[in-house]
Length: 507
Ligand code: FAD
Ligand code: ZN
Image (cartoon, rainbow, N blue to C red; front, side, top):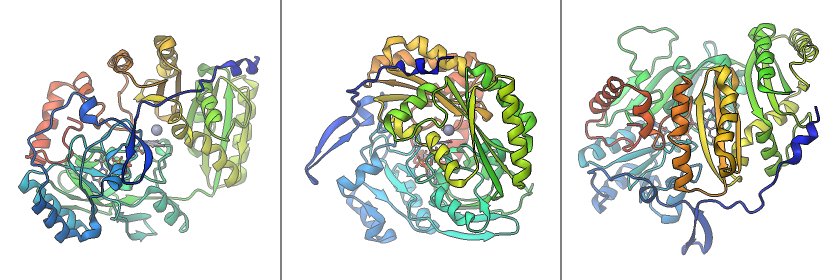
């Protein structure tokens, strides 16, 4: 196969973003901000009170001056989402440092009917973390203390605002590791991870957060503190209330503390970076890996050549094996270096012999492994620069997984600049991206709801790991029965009767 042929893709030079340029008087700098969400989306403000001076006085009393952000310039980073697609108009960020403060804030907001949008690291992709109108932003960034580590049972207790990467570094020094890892680890909070039930690259091995979160402390909408801070692996006493909050995206309560089942740091980690001719071959190589590498597999990721091409265009990284139509990344984590290496080499040679793969490299040193992982991790940073990107996080049965990318590429035709796919193959989770020169309502209407209908027909899920947030809420009725939705509404009414917690999201 002439892999060089793949390099013939055009590069678009003058990709402009859909965001509006705004001149900031305060700083005399030109910033680019998206348009206000309330102006771009069809959404009505709920019957909430607007902020008044005496509210601010109360919050200052509870938090002190440092706990409030009111400066218009400083507010922007909290009002605009990670993707720079959405922009809220909040005039107040509250930054509590203790659960009791969160409790006082919520009790007050509930009483005065003030809407609240909780924010972790603001790396969420579906618009759950930024306000739609003027909701008060409750930032968890100062609640970032590690409370306790039980090294024997590997249970870590910490506050919700701890940054995932900081927790991982802390554990690494103690030969342990977080059971979750994702590209946004340098900014996302464990509280945000739990609230979105985030997946990431370690899910294949360690399962989802529903299994790894042993306990939670949550502040309810009325300010009551719900203590479910269990640290036992097994506890079947009564309803499993913590599960209400895992994945509820800040709509049912505010997570303030968590107890997490961590895992031993593997002694031997290796990374295989493989190139293949097509997705069918990738599936064969993956299936073989499940049988041949079994218990040592810790991550299985895939990316197509369009993704690699984009990373190469916008970063200084490149494919370590040259250009191939599609790439498979397999990480192994074991306890015996020689044993793992032998297994890997046998697997690699056998895949080559059977023509499942065309080329590959094995990385063994931490530096090499990190370098290869950074290709995967820099995808989001790159597509950010690729014009306006419509981003879809879907689950699909494996036989349809990559066919769907091809199908969408045909469907988009000349309307898009690039249609590319990558994701957590081991979990059947595809990140499908459609980049266009600039946002237009016509293109959005062309893509949605078509894409969600097709996912539904293919028996997939329209949100594998990012949640529903603001952007996907209108599609919920397409995929959930009316009984499902009314049960969710009943729960919401029970937990938050005045609807002050993250309104306009999920439901
Ligand atoms: P935010 O974005 O601040 O908030 C997300 C939601 O949780 C909001 O609805 C917010 O209201 C709510 N929330 C936050 N904190 C709390 C709290 N303490 N209590 C109650 N509600 C709260 N996601 C994956 O699942 N897997 C991935 O592999 C992955 N990779 C990513 C890579 C990149 C580069 C980026 C930018 C994002 C990625 N994401 C991924 C999405 C995102 O990082 C996750 O959804 C993450 O869990 C969000 O955490 P956060 O702290 O940034 O939360
Ligand atoms: Zn992901």
